[in-house]
Length: 316
Image (tube, rainbow, N blue to C red; front, side):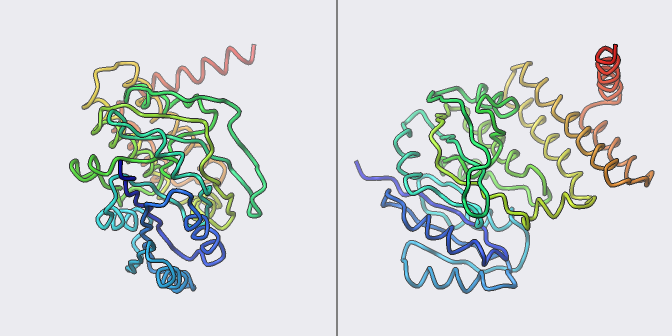
């Protein structure tokens, strides 16, 4: 049997410090049949030139240059250009282990549309900061995969895009794309939409295929330094996940999990506003409006009552 072509999509924006290491890790894959689509998203440093250099030296690297539009728009261009039967994503400041693609391919079968593997969180010099201690190798249905999405048994949040292999035909046939208006949990929304479109099995393994580099200059870390209205799109993403799940499964436990997560994010944003001493009535009203719109006023009131009741019990 011919080895399936895998498309690796890498959005690139101002990562000249990390990019060569990332591309070297892709170029050293033990699995031979892959293409790497580099999307330079309007970088102002030497990242674009580095992409061109690798494309000139290695025929499997393909470069597209575009005006800056954000990581989702860069990934979407990669999805439009990919030719592989399967696809995966790599962030340009991270590292793909040399046997990652071989690991992915060893688990694919006719009934599998998605493979989920494990990863390690590492420092700039690749020292391990966090890893999963659990060991697992199993096939699960898409509803169980969605439940694990909200309550991971891996021990680390599994809503990331870069430790998964996706069957490309599902993405193409269902026109699944990253929502370019979402800046937080756009990965998770894509995964939920994919699983609900596929409705087929997922293989999940504790085998590590990816190093997630704790980059202090990353976009997410810069966002957390101060309040940014983009945080509100976290609720938008969770709301769209909840709506997608309700439309595609009758599992009421899953409905509740996805709905409850909206309030969890509400609480996270509320603490973020308090941390940065945000007192604007308009900003606070926006937080509550978005949460109520995604759920209901009664749901939010009941959720706050549960929080207060739990605090009262714990204080006794």
